[in-house]
Length: 163
Image (tube, rainbow, N blue to C red; front, side, top):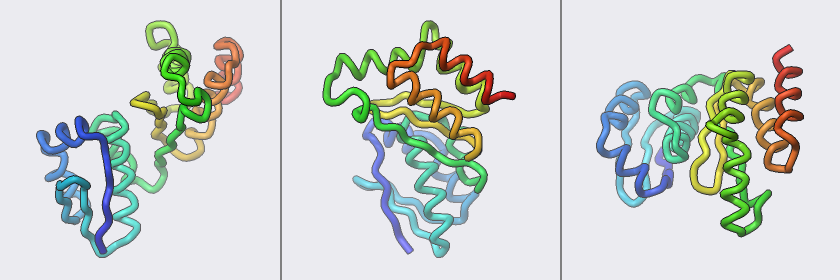
């Protein structure tokens, strides 16, 4: 069975430069080829799905080790499209990214630490990797910020999630 994945050009270049491909092929016993798209060849469709998630995560700005967590069934990749909150306005998109990141990265860091997840803000998306039960709290926190909730309200919500 063969499947294809698309990732941004600059991330594809980083993927080709590193030993990521060789390690992923060895670890998952698959064949991965780089053309305009990334093709994955494997007999197990579930393994292909997991590898696609790893490559998507890398394409959305996560580092190799964080993306590799997605090979574990307990981990998921959640993608939030910011255009659902900002429309097509470039300035609004920048403002929303700033809200999620917070002053000196405080909001992003607090969400990651409270929910034991990793967050990547790349392009027009905000992506979250973590165990499925923890990703729900992180997603809700990010959506609250994107919807205009005060940062203190989100921080209180995160305290409740931790209890």
